[in-house]
Image (tube, rainbow, N blue to C red):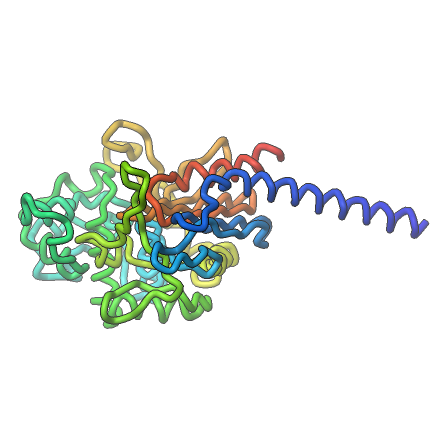
Length: 369
């Protein structure tokens, strides 16, 4: 009886391998338009049942060296960064050094009176009502080209907000995506921990997870290894490097660089609760409710958001995700925890939609179950 059993096992293994190859070919076909030896592109990672089942680079990291994008290429994550900023705050709460219901003026007594009703929780889930620092900054430099505007830092964002006299709405009454809130969260991390935000990230997240190439980029203080530079396609079809903007030095809302190799470790830590327990993660994965009911975009469309994570399901599948978009870069992480599936797409060009591409990959797996 042993031989038939062995044969059956061999057949199952062959069928499984063939199925995996078919899926790999399907995924590769999705990204075929990005294959190039002289144009920017993307890095792609698919993790299934805790194992990387697809990992590939397309295009080049920069126009000068024409170095091919690979799994070690580091991209600016943009707003993808927010889940790391939120994790820093959650670690401080876990340590007992901070509370989600602490108010902004408890931490920064010099902050104007409108901060008395803004809590750490409001900052995390985008219900703070803080004015948009980018709008404030641009008003200070009317009719000025971006390259002539000095880069602002997180501390500068806090100062801009301290110069305002009111928020855009009463905290908790509405949901409005806020880069200002996450820059302030980075400053809260610095104030409570006594460490620079980048160092806290390194000490509490990146180093423990062996994410050795991941960092919060600070020009003149550190360098991004194997760095991808951002690009924009011009009307004539040529590429122009568009890597930095006046807000690119703000860390809390989007200043981290990482690779799919390192982000595979991040995904594993989330799955295995390496840094924060399942109970610790509950607030981050609980959809925000405003005092007026379910959270909504200004358009009226419903939105589900926790701490640094969008939580809207996809085709009936539970999902936690976040996109990043900044000058020269587009990124996404799409996690389907109940399906044991994670998809990452990091692009150094602005003419692609990583989220749409990642969901095409998700369809390869989710619609065949």
